[in-house]
Image (cartoon, rainbow, N blue to C red):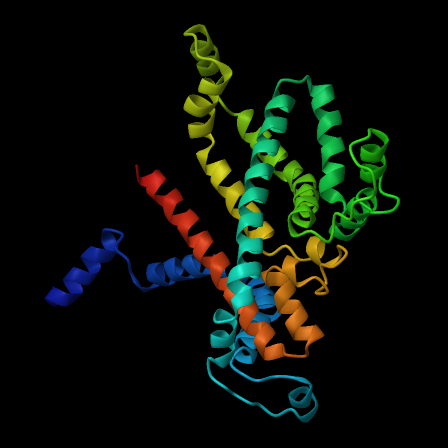
Length: 325
């Protein structure tokens, strides 16, 4: 009778296999399972990299060059380091006109959009299913309207000669002569604010309404029986329950309102003829395609992107801290 003596290593291997340990095949299966989601996402990621990432890299490269029509024709490069950034950051127009227009408008637009959208969402939750569908469909028309169309409608409403607003104010005796709303910096951005809020609040309303429908009605009824009013119920029950929804809505609204372009550029004087109403997006476009200073315009675009990244990172960090608590 022949007795086979196994080495300690072989005995350990056989015991590991018998116990269901991670052998080569098991490790290979785990690796394939971990890589499968990335393999499925690879085509979309490649398309996004080609369509989005590469243009961003090109803009960053242009921002370090004195790039104009001569460089486009000749194909030469003229790297000047950070001179474009120094010129942009030391330009008095940036700090006195462009940045205040961008930041103040974005803050007011986000605040008004979120408040109006939340109020409409609360209204819709108190309606029947039929009227909720009617109101939701009606406000979605404003959201689906292209920015170009909506801007021209508001330009027509506030037109100095034939605008409805001037005619109503003069008919009511509040004005003696037509007023040009587009020459003044503050009235110009008031119209832009109305335009942007009108176009953006339906998204907030539908998103917040979807969250409101998931809030416990028993909790709201119990708070009402305890004497809590509508405002107190909102800030103590509804808002904490929908904090993540409001965070996402505020982040998206901030990104959209900081990079507003069409609603400003298409207004009379917004294309650069009135320098007092420039924001970062329009200033970058005017310097690039109006003055043929593509390198300088790219530097402004990079600064705008950095501002948006900083704001987004701050919001995400706040959201993550709240989740940890």
